Amino acid sequence: MDGQVKDAPIVAAVPHKGTGLYNDLDMTPIVSSHKAQLAAGRPDDGIARPPYDPLSTGQKVSGILDAAGSLGGSYLAISKFERDGLHVLRADIQSLDKLVHTPELYEFRSLGASLNTKVGKLANAAQDDVLGLQSAKPHLFDTYSGRGVWKGVEMKTPKYDLMNSSEQALMQRSNNLNYLAKSLSRGVNTSNTANFKSGLTDLRNLDTNPVAVREGLAPELRQIENLGAQVNEQVAKSTLSMAAESRALLFKNAGIIGLGMATNAIIEKTFLKDSAPKGLTIATDCAAPFIVLSELPLWAKFTVIVGAHAAARLAEYGMSK
View 1 (tube, rainbow, N blue to C red):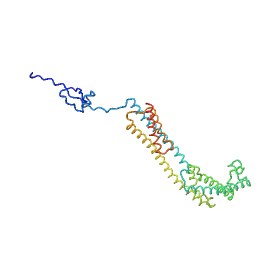
View 2: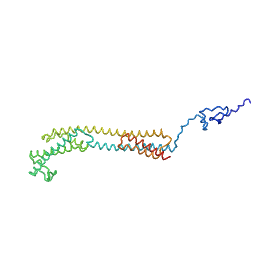
View 3: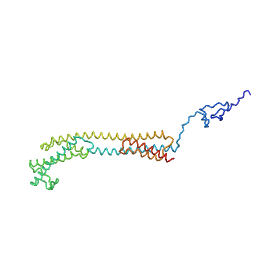
View 4: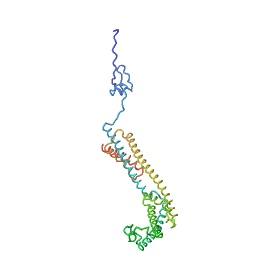
């Protein structure tokens, strides 16, 4: 009838005895790009859909836990590595022999021992002279005030106002030699770095001591002061070098952990993308970074981090069969 719209023909996909799908109007093959969508009951609406994800929500959570465990274990391992490294560094810096192995240090010690012996003999002889004066003229000393014991006898405080010039000179020589002996003993102490550094102050200007000049010790005292300054410069350079080495070692081990984690992630994405790590792998990845605390070479540490992860995944696969 004129003016009436005829119903549009209904087109449906009907199966054919062949392998494809055909239009039931003219039995022409349906375009292959539509075929799969029609077979799956999906309309060709042009809406973008996410790619197929084989992992369940639980498996995704396991993957997140594994990544978090790896990061947490890595942080704890590097933190402990840094603390232990600083402890070792401090111990090494405190040891003068670990910092410096130079001819100047050897000469410093040798000359220091020689000077200690010379000055010690002079100081002891001068103390014997004071003891003799005290025994011969006790009235020149304060009976009620002592200043130590020498060879079993309590040394008394001298009364300088009652002494003549030669007696005063004898007392002054003994005092200067005692001061020189004590300063020198502290100054050449190389038992550790701290004692060596503080001792350099005691060596300063000992060559100007009047007794040292009279006894001919000034040149050697000047020499040992200069040697101490040279060794101190070597200590400063070695300390900086050790600190730099410690930092470099820290960064290298942190890098090995990071490289191992990246390698494990690549293995997961490339070969194990259809499954997720379980408890054994999570625990292994948490513990593996602590291998950096061992004395193994860097390549061996990397092998342990990656190998432990792969072994744990294989074990989980075997247990799931």
